Length: 206
Image 1 (spheres, helix red, strand yellow):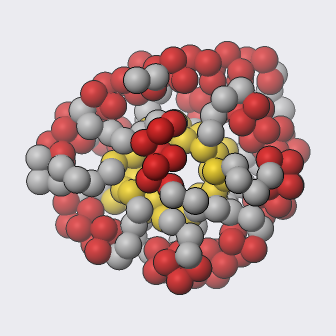
Image 2: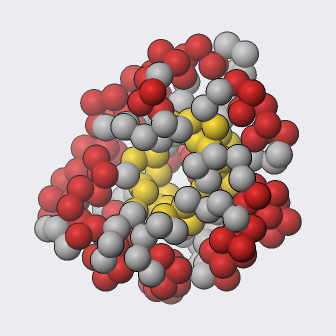
C-alpha cells in the first residue's frame, strides 16, 4: 500500500488502544464500517496482535490497517506477521529501519526539527507529529517553512474542533485516539462511536 497516498486522500487515522480485545476489535470494525479508511491498532492494547489478525481477516487484504506504538524490530516483525500493512511509531526507533526491510511504510514519530530530519532520512513515509498538543497548530505551521515537502500527521490531543486548524496549517492528515474512540474500547455504545466518526469525517472533509 502507498501510505502517503492514503493519508492524503482520507486525512483521518483512527488509533485504537484499549484493555479489552473484544471491544477493541468491535471498535476497529465499527470505525471502518462508518467510513474511516485508515485504522491503527496500538501494540499497547491487550492482545493487540490477536486484534490485528482478526481485524485483517474481517476487513480483507486491501484495507489500510496498521500497527501502532511499534518500537523494536521484533515488534515490527510480529505486527507484519499479524497482518499490519503499515507501522506507526511514537519516536525514532529500531522499528523504522525494520519496517523498511519488511517493505512496510512507517509513520514515524518526531517532534523537533532534528527528529524530523532523522526520521525522514531513516525512510519514514510521513511524520507523526507527537505530541501535537505540545505546540498546537501554530507549531505545525512553523515546521512547514523549513519542511515544505514533508507530510505531517499530528497526533496527541487532536479533537474535532482542532482538526481543521491542523489541516489548515499544513497537516496531511490527523491521527486521533481517545477523542474519537471514547469508551468504545471498553465496551461503550457503538452508536455513540459512529456519531463521533461522523463528526471527525466532517471536520477533515476537504
